[in-house]
Length: 186
Image (cartoon, rainbow, N blue to C red):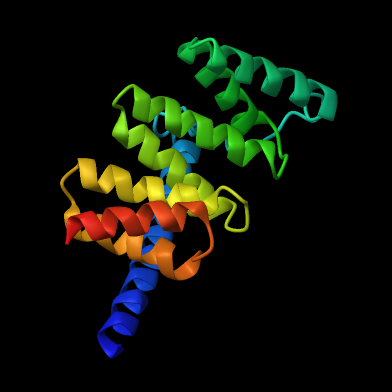
């Protein structure tokens, strides 16, 4: 029993470290991005994922957001992944909606996983778990991070992530899926 409690605590701490590492990386990228606009760094690459925190107020109205989101979902359902991804990315980069921004990032991650772009998928899942820790998609996002680790043969990290999902979100469908994977790993 004590070993299980310690394993759950280790899983929780690893998840926290992962979240903090992601935040540090984002801050470093933001710093590089802000330095690249300085004339001292004319050849510095600007991170295209970063919009320096500026949102266009004219775009941040609910009707525009709903139209873009609905169209992105329609493209996703029609397997037009490239257009769908770009529309979801537009939402993430330009809107502040606490439900549709994390959902858009979630779908971007799913599209990236479908295209075997695991780094982009991991980035987007980490963005969701770090920026929107109370969103209803968080348990599944954490489980998907474990899936990516497993595909990358990072078995210990995957196992830790699955244990985190089971212990932190025990009644979620993601916990059931994670538990099944843990049982198959043993």
